[in-house]
Length: 431
Image (cartoon, rainbow, N blue to C red; front, side):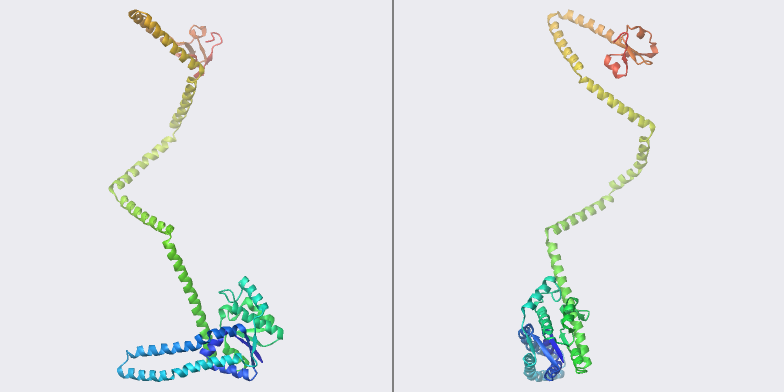
């Protein structure tokens, strides 16, 4: 004897597509070879969807066939169109019978749920707690959606199997996305199934044939497998389409974002700038400039070589020394002694001005002329004397100054000039 836990999606497929398999299950249940375990969650899902998924779906299917056939009749020859219309009228007469058959199939599945041998399982607190743990851990069947109902189905069944020590229990579900991986039970649920001894199957026809050999034809078994593969492919395609829709929506939002619009504007400006640069490169002025640059290149190379020449490096060194010398002179000009001389000169100028006011102009002019002559004489006579071959400077009256040869004689205007040029005072005349 086998215990079958059949998922809601399989019951809907049986009521809509595989009436023959449902009849085989009913026969096995009546003969005691199969006992159905039906968790309360499956009953609630079945009652919620049985009308829309089976009865209303069948009606919509019939309406679609009739509409398509009438449209096709418009493009047929008159004789063929009349024959098709006659067949449609006969089909319309049988529509009520087809709808009644769908309702009868729903009632047949309801009777299986209410069969005396069927085990109805309520939702336990233990199953709810375990389902919450799976959801928090994002383990199957919670990987793709909120699958609380799917989790409660397997958890309630597993708890009952362990409690009553049942064997040969099979959970049948075509929902391979939540319960399976590579045609086997999902790794997240494998321990649960092994602990209670429950098996997993995605094909109700192959499961029936395992209970009783060749009860369902091999063609039906293969058809269910093909449909399952197509459903999985369609579901994967739908998921990718949803992802693509979300991606396109995100791209659309990004295109409207101020940052991307600014990037687009800057790209346009850059394109215009590059176009302008391309035009400028072809302009006669720029081509002439390019030619001049080529001619200038050898000259720049020559200048670079000259900069590295010893003569130019010596000039650079001397320029640096001159800069340091000018800096020293500038500092000397700011020295207190030189500033005192400047102050005395100003006072002397004021004194001379006062004297000039009190002296007769002609006499003053004569005196001024004499002073100029004296000054010229004084300027022509150096204040200090040094030798180009010595590092001492002397008063002109010093005996050592008188011994300096004319070709070595160096005239110095001031003591500061002598010191700046590197001379030191004579110890004899002490200038």
